[in-house]
Length: 295
Image (cartoon, rainbow, N blue to C red; front, side, top):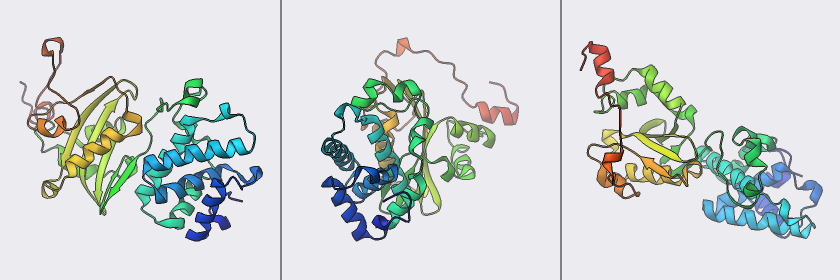
């Protein structure tokens, strides 16, 4: 029975594969179908399939298992199924631990935390009929997310961010020249931030300012100069637009001086009716605060 990372079902790659096969055959006794077993199942699928394939397999497997056990099919919860697959995917991608070892670490992290979803969802959303039948994005905070490609990692984990590095990026840009480090730190705390890492080094950044429901403002997209020309910005944008907490917005916005070609690839267009838009803009704000210059 899987309660924690010491379970015999997680002892080896072969044992994990046998566990997943047993789940697919609906051979796991109901008393052994613990939350930790759910997490192990999601991890097992994520090791052998891309994210969307793992979601489909987990959904079908849970519904098949419930039917075999005579459980009312209306009890199936689509949002919680996807929530846990997304959380497990982020963990495995970020840690980069292969095989059963990775699933042991996953179960060690989440196997006894079945109520984790309450950190992300209000009661009304989590218990709604719509969340049972279709995906509802978290309304309290953004899901963790991570992706790997070759030797690079994109992650939204704020603990991985290098504040000094990010400050170094931004204080030299045309849009945030001279920005104080404490302002950068506050902006990161209040955004969904995508860091790109090559080993221990952070090489790129993007952040999204959002209500997690209708609107997202893309800001501070930056790739270290010596890492440009490798497709990092394109992959970073793919990850931003694929984040499950940032889908379905009514509107996305950004401001750019010279990167329209990049953002057009992801659906951004020049504002169609510019006369409808208004702004308060303070270019050079941070630089002027330091020098004492007033525009």
